[in-house]
Image 1 (cartoon, rainbow, N blue to C red):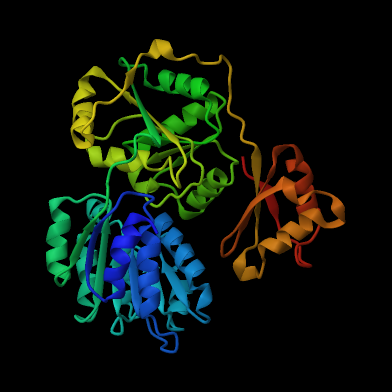
Image 2: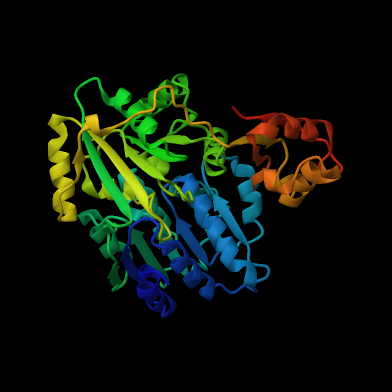
Amino acid sequence: MTPIQAQSLPVILNGEDLLAQAKTGSGKTAAFAIGLLDRVEVQTCASQALVLCPTRELAEQVSREIRCLARAMPNTRLVTLCGGKPAGPQRDSLQHGPHIVVGTPGRVVQHLQQGALQLQHLKVLVLDEADRMLDMGFQEDIMHIIDMTPRQRQTLLFSATYPQRIKQVSDLVQNNPVEVRVESLHDSNKIKQVFYEIRKGERTRTLIALLQHYRPESSVIFCNRKQQCQELADELWQQGFHAQALHGDLEQKGRDQVLAQFANKSSSILVATDVAARGLDIKDLQVVINFELSPDPQIYIHRIGRTGRAGKEGLALSLFMESEKYKLESIEAYQDSAVRIEKLSSLRPRENFRLSPPMVTLCINGGRKNKVRAGDILGALTAKSQLEGKQIGKIELLDLVAYVAVERPIARQALKILSEGKIKGRKFKVRKLR
């Protein structure tokens, strides 16, 4: 078990309230998922556990992990309630009495107000990434939801940071919670942190030099504002880098596509804001780049924690100007160690170097609700030995669409096979994502 699991699981399984602080990638989702599954009575068709998350991406990730852990419990039903998707199908799913509900505060409130969601049988309430939910202005919605739950419930509050507001919310909604805090800093031996001082007007040019020097196969670049995020992604694209933007203005369909392409190695660079990046769980992320530093050192720690996971080494690169040195001092004080500053002259960018993703994503106009399975897509591509299984990458199924990654050299052939052939005896529209 990870430290947060070892310290929190006994408390959760004992039925006590928990106030826990743990850095990203610490394994906290499995801790509360195991705990709430232990409390669920499958024979009772009612919502017994509710998990609130700040973003759609985190809610989807939490739902996937709970479903994975619940495989040993037949007939366990889970519903995900998030904005950006039609509310009608969600209402239909709620009529069947799901045991577990995972969602964002705004959409959960909507279903409560419409009477589609009933919480009178709730046993466990989880507030995941509570600090970010407060930052996003969800406190009123959270309190409204809690007012609709039984007083006799278990409340688990998880937060990556521990501002005073978290303590205030805990005092309002929890009953003598056990406090658990695991190491919030990252092992310097696992994540190498390097800072580069720049002058005004050099930020984008230096970023490109970093990419050409380090040549990472995958990197997440953090911006402080969503407009800056989109503009940077567009600029990188024009410079020949396969970059995608992830921010709050994207519709759900666009967010799904961006995340699918980055996760399956069809895109090399993800340019994101902090809010949009909450809940990202990308395996083998090599580099995190702070295009701009956040004034909050805890957010910096949360950002760089996207790399160096599962015992692997990671790299965190940051740009700053003379006027931003106070941010470095805050980080040094928080980490209780000096940061490493390198000169730009130490970079050896390879001229005209461009990152070319090894995979290409094909989007199929059919998903879980069309009874399409990953094996059906793989079978369609490899039937008659046209393609080899090792040439096919990650296959992701959503309700109405599916994304399949194929090696770049065979992308055109794979597109032709799926477009002209059939999947599970049916024809589907297929297109290649850029």
